[in-house]
Image (cartoon, rainbow, N blue to C red; front, top):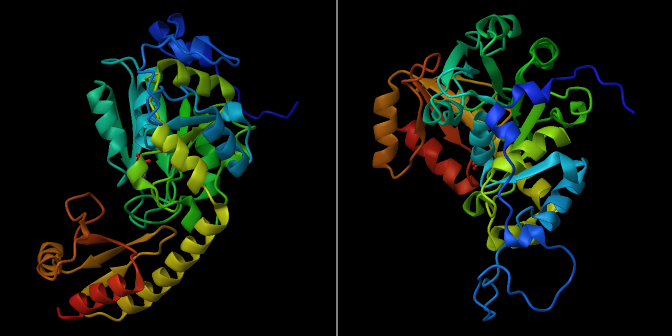
Length: 348
Ligand SMILES: *Cc1c(COP(=O)(O)O)cnc(C)c1O
């Protein structure tokens, strides 16, 4: 038995209706074992590779992911993108019209959107002006109805990692769910918080296959958490949330060595871009980054954005976001793409 620094009362955190319900029991989940004749699910009997429903619990894909992440199978939830996990966490723990979630802006937009869809209020605390996290300010924004705190590290759109001691302070002192979204963790020097899962029963880590793994098109992301939290997500997800195609591609494409190579190239390009950007007249500030994008401040973001468009280059204009005035978010591309970006910016 491992020492656990933080326990939570999951039974009381989960919405009562969800605690009380039983999951939909699909034909494929009621049967386990081997059989030759499947007349249980009203599928077409004609084999075209896809006539059968996928495995509802994605056992093979989850096992492979669990091994990759160094956690147990029961700690993995596989979603249709990590966006699915964000939505399910809110639906599992937040009573519409009553509970709220806390977010730390500027950050990824989906936490607020998923909360809004579910009629759950969002309490937004801003990062400090240098984009560092003030844990005490986040904790004081939370009240007895705050069920989830969303942290994103490395943070989108600022690019920096949040201070580990500040995150730990929140994990220790908040009696609800703490989500750490590690969509960009592979591009950083940090191992993230997976090794802390055994200490904090309230910790949920989100990771995705959309960025470093290069699989945005298949829609797959994971929530890694205690088996208790994972079984709640499994209970409320759509039975067949991950298609056979996506499960097969995960089994085929999750090659750690290939990912490491791609990440290395992106990081080299990131270093090159950081140097080039710092020498441009139009760029007023380049923020440090642990991700595959760079936030830059320019004089007139809208003008720069439109100029880049005229050169056929699309970047993300974040200039309407608090603390991101006149900021553009630039994704690191191929060497050729990055050169085109620098050329276009140098014209200003
Ligand atoms: C891109 C991104 C994701 C990924 O979402 P998917 O639904 O897995 O594609 C999640 N969180 C953040 C902060 C992101 O930037």
